[in-house]
Length: 66
Image (tube, rainbow, N blue to C red):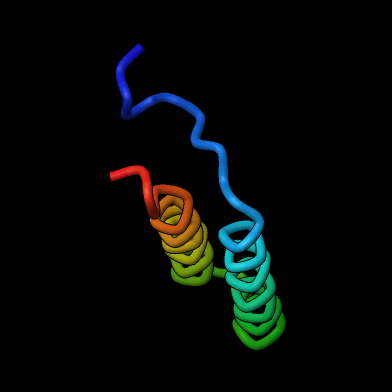
């Protein structure tokens, strides 16, 4: 299987970092959803936050695997 698609086991330290990142993004999601009116722009902002969260978690999970 190509290395790029394999599930990467994460260490406890990495899991703690991922949990912290998710907590911080959760606050951002809550802020945007409560402070911005529903609109295409708000939807795009949420999508970009989701993308940023994905890449942050991916970056942490790839530590020590590169």
